[in-house]
Length: 361
Image 1 (cartoon, rainbow, N blue to C red):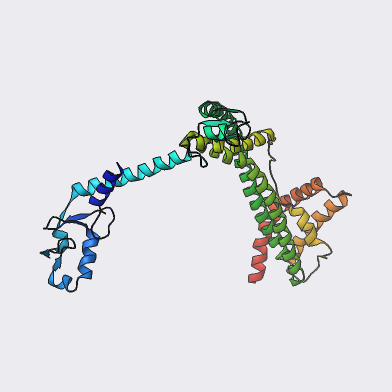
Image 2: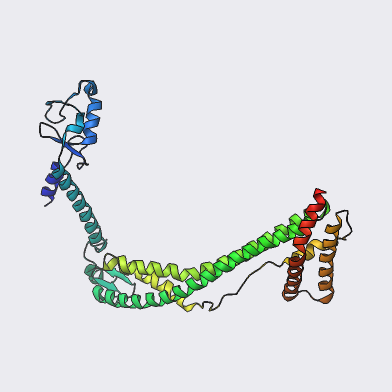
């Protein structure tokens, strides 16, 4: 069989490149076949062939005269192209089959791996059991273990699928929270810019520092959310790995080599608890950073009257809140946020239009 294959490989190889014919395959008047690209290279290699439109066949040396459209007028050997392509596919399939066979052969004894060592949890051959290091170990038929493990693997992959679906739903929610958080950070910076923009140069450095703090807080919270998101997505990734092994394993040995590792990961993951409910929102406190912005700042600076009035009102809102809370915590800052947003909803549009008119005047 090997001799026949070698002969066929030789017959289906181009005499110039010595590889299997690459379409299009052209046949010369002397009946010898070549790849088109090899004929083109032959014309380049033979001096004056392009000018005289004559060249020698690389096999029989018969002089060939090209007419009209040159080598494009030469006939294609469609049958030879088809046979070459079929042979190329058969060679590729034979190589894959040989590789699969090698995976089922013991590297030490070159015997078929048909037993499973339960002590070491690896496939072994008969010689490994009788004369090798597994002689005192408990073994069973590999085919029996394969069916048992495959059934167990199928059950676990179903459990992992359920976990993966739940994690995917929570992942979507976490992603939305993250997007809302980033939007909240941008809105907070925009509000700080609107308020701080009406102040003078003396607080611009302070504004920049506060916005950096906002970015840092946002980054820290995003990092935490990303870690949570990654943990939620872990079951889905493991599920896809297990599914790929189950659907695409080419033989029993390959499956059993992947089985133990993935089942161990699945077992550990299924023991871990998963949050049934993720937090509704993560935001940036405008009030907290506005407090930092207005701290130790007196609102009687040299700026347009409307701007001064706006800042005075902001300061009054802040002072009312500050004197109402002896201890500042997350709940108190949430109350300050609500007060500020309510005030801004009433005042900021009027302030911006009036401030623009004053500047133009």
